[in-house]
Image (tube, rainbow, N blue to C red; front, side, top):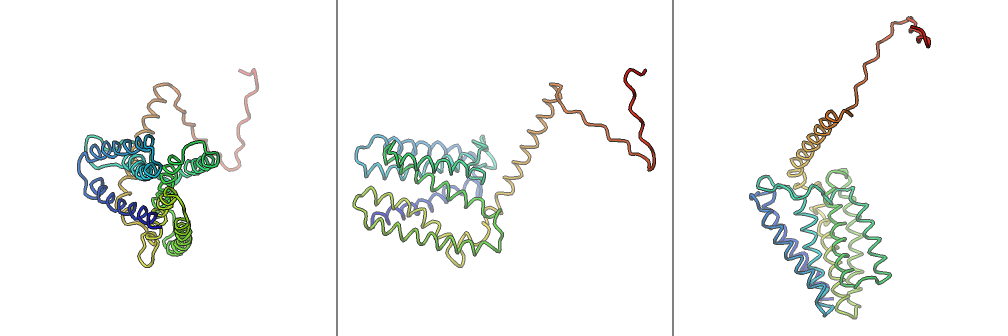
Amino acid sequence: MLRALATGFAGILYFVVSLLLFIPFRMKPIANYNLCMLPLLSAIALALFYKVCTVTEENRAYQYAYACAILMWQVLGEIASVRVPEGMILQFSGMNIKILDAYIYVAALWILLHILWRTKAIANRFLFLMLIFLSIWSFELYMDNYSSRIAVDAMPNIANIILVVFLVITIVILYVANKATTVEKKTAMGGLLYITLCIVIMTLPPKGQWRKPQAFYLKYEKPAIEIEIKNLQEELENIKKLQEQMGIAKKEEAPAVPQQKGQTPPAPAEQGKQ
């Protein structure tokens, strides 16, 4: 169990460190900060993935997979779509995989992961890597959308339900970790413990983060959404110009002439009549 606890708390410790690393993106912007962080974290994630592929000791492979999954999420799920206020490149990708509509891809990947696990089509170390990556993605999918989609009055009640559910899951994970006979299984339980502990911490009364709208969301997401709206309006105007240039612009229909009360509409002209 100690290995599982150490693995879980190591993830939480890095989560706290990563919060400090991400402050210069929006809260205290530093120009071109993303040009530094994206290559750096990408290089570390690729190096960890290379270790996952090449290391012969399975226990070490699990440890590398755990760290690689966390870094992969920060590269693909965070930095790629975050927009900085100033710099040479304001945003690397307009695709935000944390919006609620991304649920279908998360669900599909969970199903595929389950099939791969049941059929043993790939090594367990890669299954563990994807398990942690998808768990973080599922966690972030809720965390980034509840502020705008859940009624404020209902948030404490929902947080209580989530707290109870994940406390039970945490206890089950600890029990399985205590009974585990292999180091790899204990490490895997520690990776899941990282996710459940994060959720438990965010739902704890009285000031758990999921008991009210996120202050960060309310303060920093509004400008980002306004920029998205502006970009969509510019794209719409460009489409209209292209339609006009290609002669496929839809002609506006002339408004119908209102009929006077009691007035009989004119009869249609007979065919062949001049």
